[in-house]
Image (tube, rainbow, N blue to C red; front, top):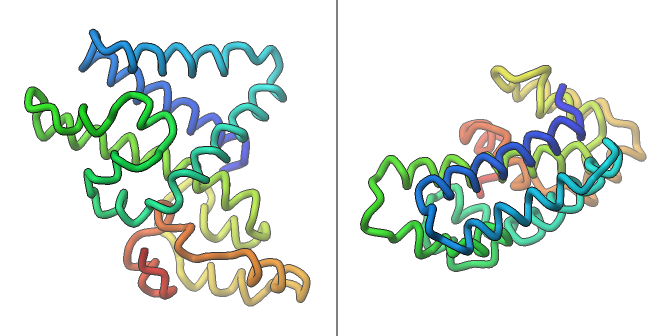
Length: 192
């Protein structure tokens, strides 16, 4: 199973890769360079693993806060989402980058891939922090592979009364949209 630490490191790595790819495509863009340097400074200033993990979780929390209202637009690949507040994604003027006539469809596809990956890793961290362990293991699996809906249902049914109350009060199935295949989302009644 993925751990909170894994999700944080994966988010950081995806963010660094995304900004690096943007720098490679738009090397003259000051906004991209500043965002890249800012991210490097945030993470590289952490002298301990605990400090780095805390910084990752802080950044993920901020990203989830601004991105969550727009998950449906991201899943639909609606370029209008780049006009919304998505934190560092907007800091690099993504709406202009996506509309740039000098890029091809492959570059636009890569942008969506990075945005999707950032959302997936942020959502994994959010799930790990909010769902009971058994449900988290069922959703995230043991290192990937097919998601078994029955395993998720069984995990939910196996919750203690206190876990069930916590689960029901704070869980929104749409918060799994980047972690579960569309068919599984439909099966649990959580179309974004």
